[in-house]
Length: 58
Image (cartoon, rainbow, N blue to C red; front, side, top):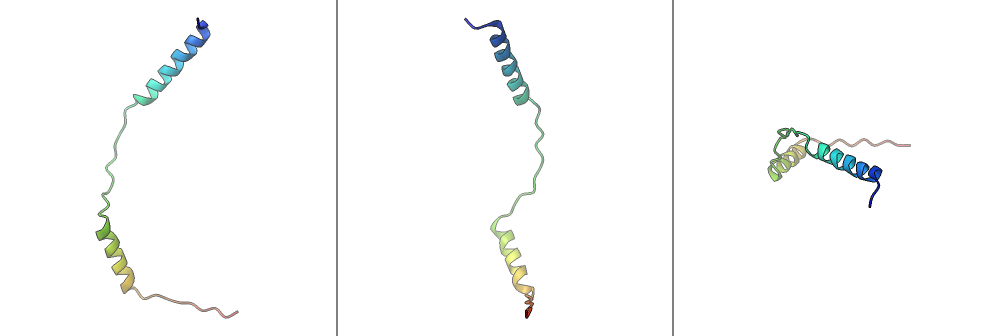
């Protein structure tokens, strides 16, 4: 048979777990990623921007 101390510790741990998992949760609305379309737009914008090269002679 288990000691009263061990039984008490098990009960406390179970209550702690229950308290953590039963907390109210708030779900935030996150922006929806429009996937490939967004990436294609970003790639097209990058193509239209001039690229700059800096040469440093040491």
